Image 1 (cartoon, helix red, strand yellow):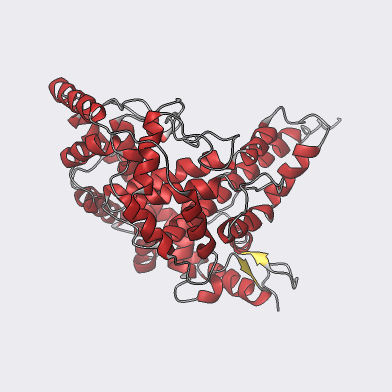
Image 2: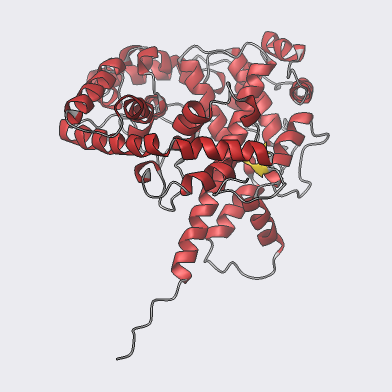
Length: 453
């Protein structure tokens, strides 16, 4: 028998769609973990549903992007069976947010910091009951203690000292002047070899180690300092820096004293504060980070290093990411680098199956004007230049690894990052399309007519 919340079809279904349908079937209980339309938040899926309920490592049959009917029913059942604990998780999260406000805690994203803690509390205690306020306060204090002062507020306080800022600015100027530009750029032929191997089962290639030894990431970074290298990606219609800076040549980093996720500039154009702000905001295990003074000290040199990264394996992954990014073709328009690799075929086939992409593809060929005033057309435009969002997210992820000294030892680990970023960008675009469609649908609903007397 098919699950009550899942359609009885023999077709393979996207795992994300199965999760969405099962979640909505839980009703309003886990509302605090859901978006405005009732779907689970992206962080809910990432931090709770997949690692704590689905557990793909123990259930490899549920790890695929597309599931057969039997696997879809199994996943649906897992989520439905977790309904009570998910409702309790939502209640604990609401209580922790209320207690957080009362304690005046503002650092960090509550979802990143508390989602998994709340699931643990719900599993152990059920819904909040007598004594829950004390438990919530203890959890919050434990999270704050674990951060060891590694917070945005601590960073802001550290950079509020005028004398310290002046010294850091002088150090940035000296480090920037000491850069060594170099002609030429990375060999994208080797990058293509690595990406071709990434499509194989083992996703390994000795070319990755060769690129690291030869410093191909450093070559690209230094070339971008000198001037834009021509045709480095075999595409004349994309900038060589792939949107990592808004300038012809990356500018010298400034110290900065504030940041906003809504207005962050391109990665190479960010201040010292903005670079570390993103690291601190995204960190769920801050105890693994250096202290704030050490973070700042290291970031001075890192921000003036090739591609804004220390580790060469991470720089090489930028080269690989660029080679992959310029071949992304979600609309199936055929605009790509010459000779796409196995990695391109894997990512593009996934993109082109997306319903939101199919809608955008129709819009790109439709002679009719955009009926919504430009919202969906803007989302379709993102699919015409997918390399921009991809490279921005890739750099942020690699920068976070660099701060933690987490190098990528081989092609397989690099592919894990490259493919993960592609999935993340795709899911983010899907969510934005759904939000836009819900907004347009709500606006199109006619107001209820008054009943006649």
